[in-house]
Length: 229
Image 1 (cartoon, one colour):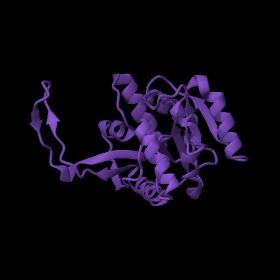
Image 2 (cartoon, helix red, strand yellow):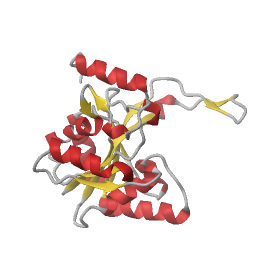
Image 3 (cartoon, one colour):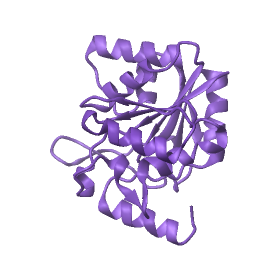
Image 4 (cartoon, one colour):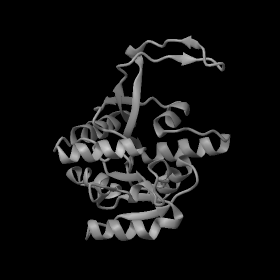
């Protein structure tokens, strides 16, 4: 089954205190987007990958990926104001004969090869799979007044990560239904599950961090300096 890679890189870098999109922020001297794409070279998914970029920085991202991956036909397309819109635009860029699409956040540059392979294998069987990690902390749910309302059983709770892998036709149809209903989701696994399709959970690792804040960036650079990733 053919697998395509969609990298969501349209997010702004405001919480990083930058005036460029997060994907262009350098982590130990290398743009975050480039570090993330390199993680997928081991499974031959960079060739033909689709990157979703902010319209104002599409050309800049195209130049960077073309320079960093010469000979690879990485396509950079314009995203939208919301992640869900951006992913839908990225999905439209794939050939219809693509079987599976792995959707990954550009802000997660340390995904392991093992997790990539396992989530793709799971999607080949189930049609939909996501990487996630078991919650180790007790999770508290509050009411509208900030008072403790419930304590879910953490044995059934997972922290969502990416990549998330789906059949192309399935994920396109799920996005179409969400648009028609006017509903919004923060990740594609939830979107697909809301449409009635089961999603397999594949165990990831705590090292698959998402770089969102300055402290995340500092921690990522520390991991690189120490050779921990």
